[in-house]
Image (cartoon, rainbow over the protein chains, first blue to last red):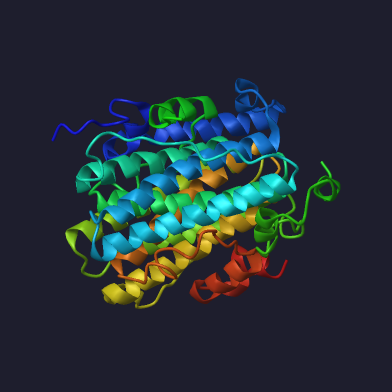
Length: 211
Length: 204
């Protein structure tokens, strides 16, 4: 099938399906570096790599991704592509994203910020008419969502928000695993969740934002 | 850094914040002395998981067998990484206790249910302990491990055809588990509870 693959060749797919690509050394190395830096009292290399917008900026970033996921899963759930248990699983995932949106929006307001509005999204033609194409796109989005949350772990200031974001991220991991399973991909692509920077994530989703 | 004073400056009445505060161990500083202590606690949990998957399994389909073997490999990788990190921090990794799971390995349903219970519990344990990790690189790694335990739980629950909500998923937010709850759940499977670190940890 030559369905247009939104993230085809992009870094998101690197670990979406191929267990053999998981490299123990690669991620164990990450831990090792962290521990060594910690011992030396050095600051995280992540901290200086990105601009600092504070917790409200991070929450609005998370909100944008939750909008995208809710929109895509919602349209998938309404498309009738997925029936039976698969349909039930996707509907539950959509409902979680709806709850994440509500919680993040009210938190931004309570912090004195303004929640970003939901953008208009557009997707590759035919993706809601082809079950496998939908599932693989959903897998890309869900993996990206997980990586996005993990990319902010070191940047969130408030411990409470960090706890809340972590409790959302765990649910996003469950979503990614279940969507991988539904699409016949490997639900356990790596022994530790990977992370992605905000700039990389936004660059990846930019083609889907139409206004 | 003084955690309590840091907490004072944070906002407590937010929907997200209160969801986090509802988790037993989050924002309580008493469970762990330092990051090495948290890591050694995580190591105990990983020993229990690894031992479970290493012990062998009942008859499973080939796909289930592959999942279980991948999950077991994840737990072994966690042990290796946590051990190395404890050493890098100048700590002493906790020794693996002697573990006895009894006859849980004879029956597919029982086996998978047991695995599901442990994966749920240990995913929650990472979340519960995360608030007490002060080093951000270690927090990053712990969060990454936590995510994979959540993946394991979801897939095992799906293999068991557990309900979508209250099985594969447990709502839109993961709940944390505190140290005492986790250790209490482990205690029945420790061979010599009086002499192990698990028991020592329980009585802290």
